[in-house]
Image (cartoon, rainbow, N blue to C red; front, side, top):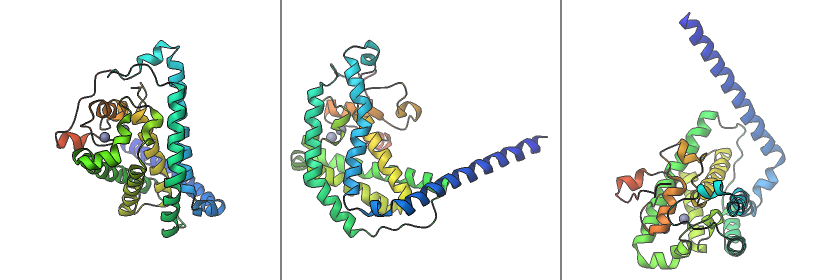
Length: 275
Ligand SMILES: [Zn+2]
Ligand SMILES: [Zn+2]
């Protein structure tokens, strides 16, 4: 009887895997067939990166607006001296600054990188397992590279002054400020992400999903809220917004962008102020 139940469980898992594989293959074929020219566009990476960043920030703009009238929203703000939510003017100011840096620096630089890259469109979509492994590997590697780079930028005074200081203008960050950095820092982060993808040898679909998740997590890190449904509450290995906000408040420690293990290992972990 137990064997029957086990067999049935295996059958259900197999069927779910087959369905997921079909969905992935269908999605990939749609992308390959119809959107190939768009995907090869030199301006696509920067345009998508900017638009997804703004799109992911939109819910937090709504939260900041609601914060002025709703006590429940204010109670989600991270306690470490957060003060009131940023004003609409701060959002606009930051928006134009990020847009200006994208148009003048990131767009031409990514167009150049895109023209030098050989884009491959394999016939097969990745399997669910391949997709999962590649994305997790990308996050672990990117997290390590960023930790080392971030640590160096704080330890070497001229690196801090010339590259990283601009990002630290926000002692209390808000979602849009995730990309409010110097052009050199934005380019260095792009280089880290591309190197990660190259080392892992990602399928293009895994690469796109990695970019999207990376953008979302960066926004969430800076949002200023410890939301009940935030990802770091589900996955304790992630630091989330309280972890990164402690970095902005203290201007040191918590150098890794997402996971906490590197800071714990190197003694740079700073406990986020309790919510
Ligand atoms: Zn920093
Ligand atoms: Zn930051």
